[in-house]
Image 1 (tube, helix red, strand yellow):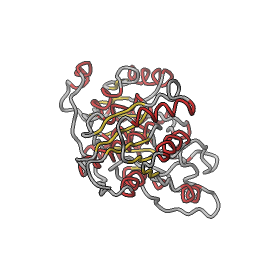
Image 2 (cartoon, one colour):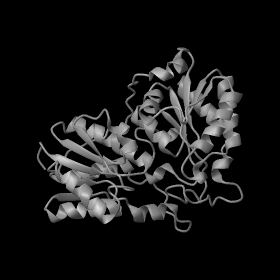
Image 3 (cartoon, helix red, strand yellow):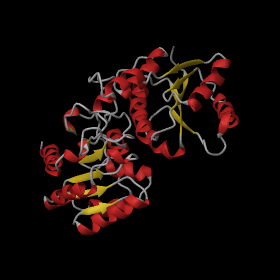
Length: 343
């Protein structure tokens, strides 16, 4: 496909997956500056794409005006106004397939992600497991653009470029000498969450070393936990429910390191160039979902023949009496963070 093209890009959820798309589109835009991208995703995720040139964000409202097949046809008609040359389906779900089908009827070129479902199933099965690194999700995204005829080479490197700190967060950054550690201790699926009592041990150790801690990610239930930690330990701040996504990204971009589960916190930090120490349970970086540009050596996990047994973390661990993630010692996490901060 030649230059001066307009490409519709479809990826509606989940939060971490959409953040990974943003990392890919940033490099795509740099390498293909004459191509205009129309990113279709949920309105909440727009901040991920705010700093990407030649990109228009078009929101999908799946629970209201774009609900059902009639709503999707309405979205299709909205997207037609851009006069796109192709559709890059980075989601491959019912909604994205429906929109693609509408465009295909008009002769628009469609390319769709290969999610590698068979090899992922082989990676997580208990018997005859094929334990090997699979293609990174970001490369699967990039493959769709390559199939459309574009050249894109991913650097797989994080690029730290601190954003302006929000005015209402200035008080969090008055100490210019203390190292600042983000902590994203929660996840959508409980099986990916490190035991909260052990995470509290990590927090106690890190604050005792003089680091400043910033807790991200969660709803009202998680906010209560984070508030308790913030009141108990010095230099520990709860950010849940205090800042919007744009502000959170700006704050994260000014941190020295992020501690995260296999969750969106890892991908948000990756997007703004911050190194991540990640903690893994029934999932595994071999499935291709490690944060963009992050190092496998910074992944903390237990070696066990039953791991991984889940791609998305929605299934319990099969490692025996105790969950594999609970076998990780708090001091292992603390030592890795110290290594990243002092390395």
